[in-house]
Length: 325
Image (cartoon, rainbow, N blue to C red):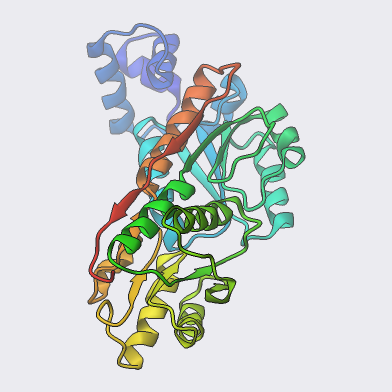
């Protein structure tokens, strides 16, 4: 097995010089750095990461804990991976299937010296659930705020996004806008509902609970919810995610209901799979790529220079004007 001493002997430099080149520490000339790195590649030297971790107390790994790995999180995860990779960090991904016990288990696993920091996307964020994590490592909370927790936070403005799309629908002449939402105890969904109600009030449109239905925001439930809403004489449907909106559009297609001729349909998220469908869905882009990049940037900034006052970043979502409203 090739060792650092072998590299040093081959290059005619000290062991300390090789160590500094490989760790990126100290001032080493570009010529020497290139010679050492070229020799490592030529001789097939593989650094002992475990030993390095023991010395530096750094793993150069970031833990990412998400509710699931689906269409919504795909862009976010890829953005985080891309940013971390550009800074020489790896990612340890944990998906807890929206199960609170599994989330806790993964956090405990990551806290055992496996990562330098954690980016967490919680479902129900409570201060007491994560105080132990903050005490032991650098933590960035994403998507759902945790009042009182001393951690950085990044999210998209769900309230603003909802207001933008409902106001756009009203500007197109829709007045009886049915809604397909999900668990309103989840902060992002409650913000979208609040935006819906506030825009209706702004334009003097009464809120009607009979055209608001709860679902798990799945394709099949969008289909079923559309049947219910249309039976209650809505002129349009706002689904809290794009997959559910596509389910509603499928129901309309199967029943010869024209979108947008007979009814308008709008979603939320702007998932990349939308280009596979004939209609360009009117939706809201929550800026997942930027959200992931900001979370990754924030965690590395905190690791390298911890700030007493933790930052919060709220991204402004973008209205995507499609062909369904």
